[in-house]
Amino acid sequence: MWYESQIDVGERMAFLEDVVLFCKRELNIPEEILVSIEQEDIYEDNVKGWTTDSAEDDEYDIEIDTHLGFKEAIITVCHEMVHVQQLHENRELDEVEAYEKEELLYKKYINNS
Image (cartoon, rainbow, N blue to C red):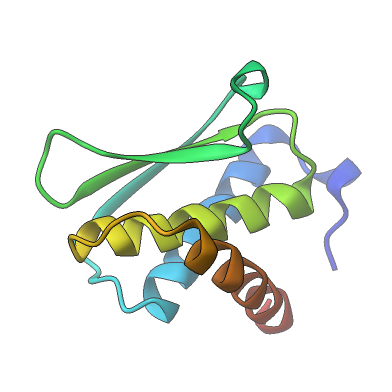
């Protein structure tokens, strides 16, 4: 089991990138879809994270707040990956769906780690 106090920034990003790969498989997002993840100080924007459709085809950018604890960061990445799926499928962003799936994805990720 991992403990947040023992994880440096590089290891944290490696975990979060692993969460992205896990979510891509679980949400049937094709492997060739590029998803980049960054940690930014977006606390004042009153969000935990957001997803943007990159100018390039099949590329998406996720930013999560640097102030999030490790568990909350993983859940936020799961949430944002649902938005990647929605964008890739040309659907409207649906927060209800993202909130419903984030916890399921998180629990499945933790149980498989």
